[in-house]
View 1 (tube, one colour):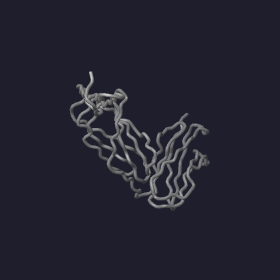
View 2: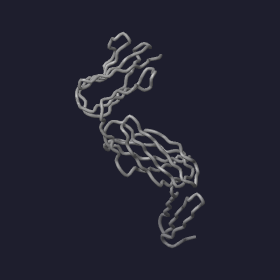
View 3: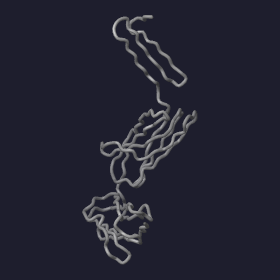
View 4: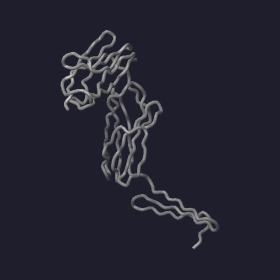
Length: 224
């Protein structure tokens, strides 16, 4: 059967999928498929910062076949990177609230987006409407390494309220220096350094932060 040029046949199912077909009288037939909206209706997406953390909160009005949200971040228009995953609520006709905390960030401006993925692998992006600012620290601080105990790697966080020359060194339990992690000028901000003890034996070690005439020492345990 022939239809007039550009005649549209449209079919919508209970899952909101649709198929539009245009039948021209002559020439090649054109078929376009529009599988409808993806299964999550987002009602809000907001963010706040607290020290080195950014807290993301979002709500859905309804969900269909929702597997998960992947949280992605970029800094200064760099490439997007995945920083976490939050499980979805499958199919739901009521409002659901979600939260994710991005931790141990350095000072700067951050963009975030949600990648919502259904159980069939289809996905859609939801972008945060504004950048999030992680400010500058107000005090000199050295945090407990994480994880602790560790094997063989751990992270050490510190903050500087004043720029200056910074030294972070590691010592064994008899006071011998075994590693230098930082030995350079640093601006005001939050910092994270990695310590890999693959070449060291199990035991208690100490890491020392020195900056602007201030010193702090903390203990960590390597267990192999």
